[in-house]
Length: 227
Image (cartoon, rainbow, N blue to C red; front, side, top):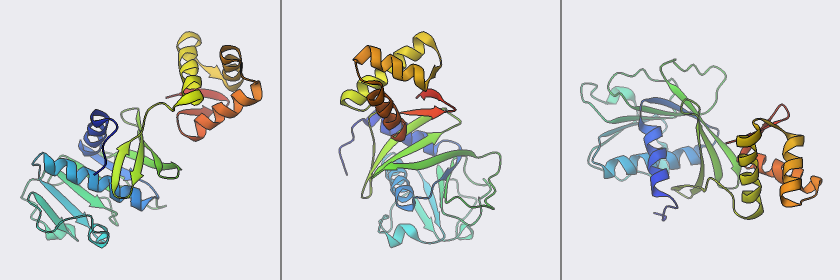
């Protein structure tokens, strides 16, 4: 288990994933399994009851679950569980169909994007996207919240909300400018960074687009949106 950079932020991430009915969509199975393990470990530490339905037995294939764990029910098919027994969280790993909520108020489903994947309206949707290397971007659109996470083997950590060094300084400048001036175009952002920090326009533009590539901000239709 790695030492967490920000335990409070990590707990907030787990709470977001385990509250209500949520579908986590991503192409990255290893990151989804690491997140699933983090959810299971965190809830078991709080003596909460968990049902894991794993049709493809990913958790056992990767050695992510200990056998005969108290408060944890692990089945391959949904039919293998007594639906009259309440659990604090039902976790479905890569099911063929999105399950109906019948025995828990809190359901987390991990899926891979599919053309015919139909998600009921009572589910919230989160997207897990890769930034670079072992860094990922997890978006909760219903909360308007985003987490930058690091996957190290089977461990998950929440990355800093601001980069270090010059990139962090540029991000601070852009945040202050948006508070003062409102919406910024890319040209506005480049000029502000140029005047505030003395960078050449080409360098300022390159740094702004690097911030966008690392998901600290977004460039949409020529406008800069700082998270």
